Amino acid sequence: MTTIDHGALLDTQHMIPDIDAFKTSRSTAKARARKDQIMRVLFTATFVVATIPLVSLLWTTVANGAKRLNVGFLTHNMTGVIGGNPTVVGGYGGVLHAIIGTLEITLGAMAISIPIGVMCAVYLIEYAKDGRLAKTIRLLVDVMSGIPSIVAGLFALSLFAIVCGPGTFNGVEGSVALALLMLPTVCKSSEEMLRIVPNELREASLALGVTKQRTITKVVLRTALPGIVSGSILAVARVIGETAPLLMTAGYIVSTNVNLFSGQMTTLPVYVYQEYSKLTANCPPNAGASCVTTIPMERAWSAALVLIVIVLVLNLIGRLVAKICSVSTER
Amino acid sequence: MGQQIDVNHLNIYYGDFLAVEDVNINIAANKVTAFIGPSGCGKSTVLCTLDRMHEITPGAHCTGEVLLEGRDLYAKDVDPVAVRRDIGMVFQRPNPFPTMSIRENVLAGVRLNNRKITKSDADDLVEWALRGANLWNEVKDRLGHPGVGLSGGQQQRLCIARAVAVHPTVLLMDEPCSALDPISTLAVEDLIEELKQDYTIVIVTHNMQQAARIADYTAFFNLKAVGQPGHLEYFADTATMFNNPQNEEAERYVSGHFG
Image 1 (cartoon, rainbow over the protein chains, first blue to last red):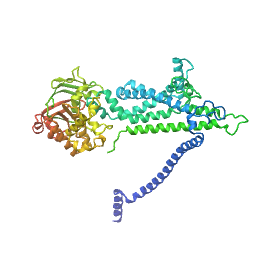
Image 2: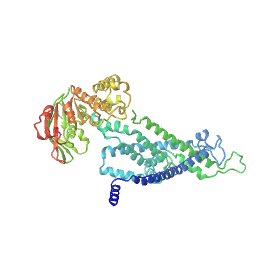
Image 3: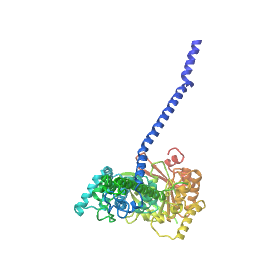
Image 4: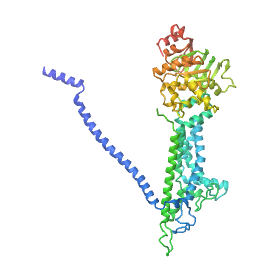
């Protein structure tokens, strides 16, 4: 009897899930919670590690740059700056010419690359779809985004050497070099933005008897506008700090040049590079305390701070534009 | 006033693939004609050929005639853009323009075509179209709000208002209620009943009760097998279609034996 009972008991144990079986899962839950804790700490730590350079960079730039950053610095160029002496007009020179150069050359680059990039994206999404030409263009755009900036500078340099004769330096040459660097970013981001415009909107527009041209300009591009704006701002932020291609194309001068199409222009990154290259300024032995030997590095830091602020302002403008034109979906 | 559409020997192709074969149908003016049939039988495709919307798909083309009051929509000198102004379309999923307010959505057909319209005319048109779509009372206080902020049923009626605002003579509806809840469906169905006073309405539906409720005529499309072209199997007035169909396949379909 007992053996049979025992057998039956064993059998039921086999059939019905054992309550005790949950014990093991409880222990795995504990282990999982522990792993969760460890990974949390790890991820937080990597986040902190990633922000350390950023915070440190900002801090260093602000700390070093604030020293010489004043109205005089922003409203003067480098004419009349000799050694570490203050200039005749007061102050130690400034970045007015570099700010003007940066803004003009970057605007020029935007004027060249944004229309081409957006139109290229429109072609890829609205016309070519997945044809062979579209695939080739996509491949070329990908390849182009890997072009080193110095190569873009060389290209612009040789292009203008062919067209305007060798030894040409001007702002628009720099714009062409930067536009080459911006183009793939603008094109790719615009393409992505146009791709996510729902087809239903195109159909809705076409079904109302709207032509394809107006459907593209007023519905598709309008809907994608916030994304295109932020993509373009990202592209600008990428090229505004370029030094090498501008050194080759736009050159470097100490005076203010507002003509984009003639004469050399200084941009902020090039200015920073030039000041850093000087390292120290000479002071005559009989100079007073007003002669600062470390002034070039201080100017470089201040110019770097100005550049960061310009990028920040550009970003804010971009965000504002994107917000104003944004597709509101809230109820 | 609505206009009648006569379709003669219509074959629709996607590239080389014959999607729908030899459709002959006379769609009466100021009546509701429903297209029913199993999935993939080409009812939506036929609907799209009635305003040349299928031409958006690369490679899509058709042979045969589609006559709107005797004018062939596929004649050489006919502009597809003009056809789409004459024949409005409402889609399965409500698709108001997300960048536009309710008012701008209704005016989209006018504004996107760069037609000049005075503010008072625009106001009248918005009110007329929204009243026509039974939406005026619900949205008159918030015409400036985004169109996508409305509920699904309201959005669909907004799309209908947008379609009627360009004064078409025919309204094509591609499963207009399939994304809506029953109450919104009822609202849209009531609206269709009213709209047939002024427009010829062609509606594709998967819902046979809906076809029975609102349609005057019903066309049953079928396909012999997957991969075969669809065809118009049987066309009758709705009472005959659902009570006494003179076609075996149609009877099996409406009585729920397949599909």
